[in-house]
Length: 254
Image (tube, rainbow, N blue to C red; front, side, top):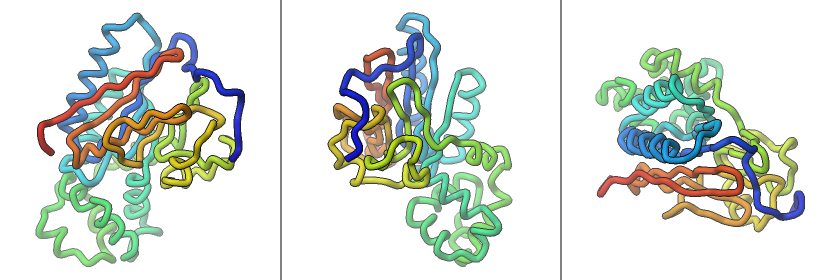
């Protein structure tokens, strides 16, 4: 285990307040509610430099991926936001890439397996049309349905964000490597090699990707993927100074 600096309460840079949003997975309804709650929470606190970080996996599984992207793009016109690419955005970009995606039945099957069908329908692909596509043409046939602005948005997403004693990533970090030597693709896909590691890590890690029934707070990391698409609970973590707090939006049933 690679161990970092002496254990102490991790801190966000002075004067900043950060809200990190977990995996949305097409739940536009929950995200609309959560963003209102975050803005209201911020308004109740003293003035600060506020940053909203979205940890990736905005798309797939839930019914309104296109609506989620439109929502966060609109929100970002009024608030300071940064976006991390999740493994689901990675798969979609690979599928839409002519060189990687055209003719790739493996990518198309993965896309379908991880909830991509719902994403395709949310972008206006007629259900009978999607159901009739062979796997080797899914990427090519989907391309005209997805606005270039959305593709550019996915391409511009970040791999990780370091702020003070914190690192924000989609899935986690390789606990055997320093931050500046991470395999960036692994930060979107890693699971138990990270979540089972005791720490301490070089930075306090805020992540999504691995679903838990509630916010998964530990001394050296915090997981905020509460399975919104199936649980009806979307979670966020607020961070300021050495303080951390959670905010959630939920529906009675998913």
